[in-house]
Image (cartoon, rainbow, N blue to C red; front, side, top):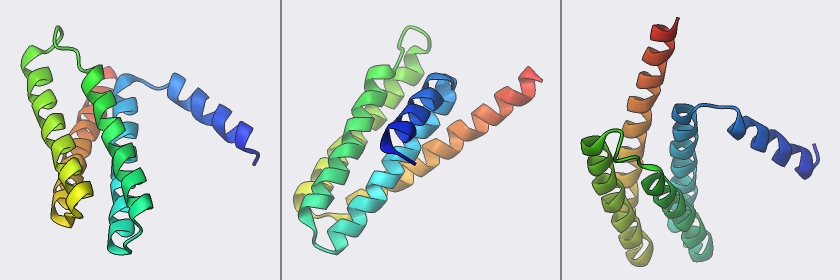
Length: 128
């Protein structure tokens, strides 16, 4: 499949899903970049490590920018603190080749993803 077709498909996919599903895609992307960064760290492929960890950091920044403190002030505040902590741990992981910090963030993302996926399932049930 040509790259242009794949890009068009992805753009259409993102533009037609709801915010909860978009959040799940972001968490999936972070998890994927962390896995790739971890593999690169273990293989001492520092450029790939840096690239993938920075991509995960970029997605975390996007999540921070998307927070809506007017709708749910306490939730937005708590998520902002959590995202800031994860970002800082990824800086440490990347600079110090700290696999434990990388794994910690990976576990946090997995937990968040699971929580939001369950919320999405419950919302669909409520909507009928």
